[in-house]
Length: 130
Length: 82
Image (cartoon, rainbow over all chains, first blue to last red; front, side):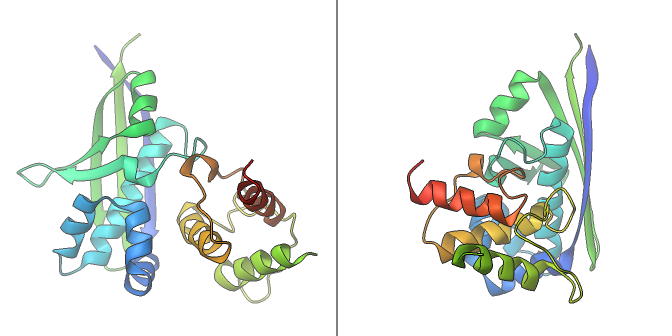
């Protein structure tokens, strides 16, 4: 049996991401996104929207965990991926994974949306029922 | 105000504040919403580049970044190897 552990939502203006990836591309991108995420976003025509959606997803995940950035999790420990049908998902590593395991998180649900001006992400975490 | 306080204060004002907003080294930045988590990424990058150091992710917390004075304390602690 599962229970809902937490829910997180985040929105970010695409222009803020575009400014950093266009002007300070490598140093910003490598701090926040994994190589897989960068490769995916760079392959897209409207890459800023995809970067923005991924940033929002990382934020939403941290909110759903209940930690926010309190525990100083690394952005790169939260990787946004997608399955063969294009459905987005989250793969955790490092300290982010440890925390999720400590909290009994079994399934991470993610939904993304992005417009020219705004990207938004929602995360729902399922944990094992006590 | 020392040089580090002034440098960081000027950066925060330039990057994150409206023209008519004023802050002091003790003004809450994160908890007041002046600096959000996305802005923390660019602020962290600025500090690392300016002071030639690396701020570990586990020390880059909202509490450590909440005021200019706390940021200065964080930078100095890393410079001094604490």
